[in-house]
Amino acid sequence: MFVRKSLVCLFTVFVFCESGFVDNLEKCKINDGECEKDLIQSVIRDIAKTGVPELGIPQIDPIAINNISLAILNVIDITLVEGTAKGIKDCIVNKFVTKVEEGRATMELTCDISIKGHYKVFSNSPLVKSLAGGDTVTGDGNGKVKIEKLYLKLDFHFDVERRNGETYIKCRPDKLNYNYKIKGKMTFFADNLYIGKQEASKLVTGVLNENWETLISSFGKPFMDKAIYIMESFLRKFFGSVPTKYYIIDDLSAYVKDN
Image 1 (cartoon, rainbow, N blue to C red):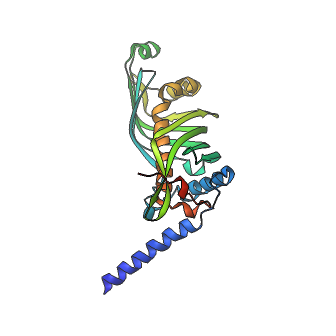
Image 2: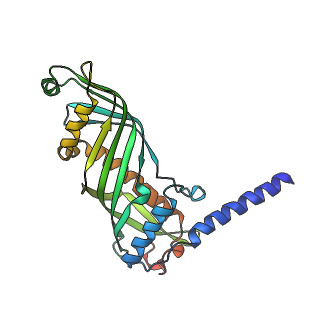
Image 3: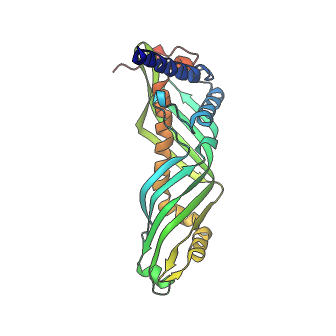
């Protein structure tokens, strides 16, 4: 009897948690970009920090970023061993346009992002040695990167599908395109950086901060790919888990794509 009552209570909590979230969503016309912009803004703001576990929607602020390796100008190797990124929940959605007839949507947003954690760096390239007096550059410590006014534009495709009598938006990650631009600046902080045996954290980060615009063209893509994947996955799970009737006024039956 106890087990049975416990299961009933658990089911009730699940239903009411899910219902409370979806019932409070703003409803929009399918081509009302201004309303949809506000809808997506509220979704990011309200659930990015907690996710909605019962719907399979993950937390994305903060988000773990581990074991990302990259080469700066092919002369310095950096690995973010274990880190976290913050700021996604405060992103500003600047624009959201849906073209349901084409199965396409475009989103533009601006974010202030910080990434910090345990890093490793190494370089013994001739170029770096010539600049560092013949010594290698090494590091194994704590680092942080602040990105101000990161502008992102996502262009993604979707299908309208029917499942269990309900219509859903199914995002297609295979057709996702994006571009980005840092409209503010990027700032680096790090400790335990060495040139040979000499501690040189201030010197090295100073060089990075003076030349971040040149450097971002070399190493920015791996981080941007990760950021876009996180955002796309978050939205894909939201749209794939919540029936359109909770946030779209129109009947989308005419757009359902046959499998």
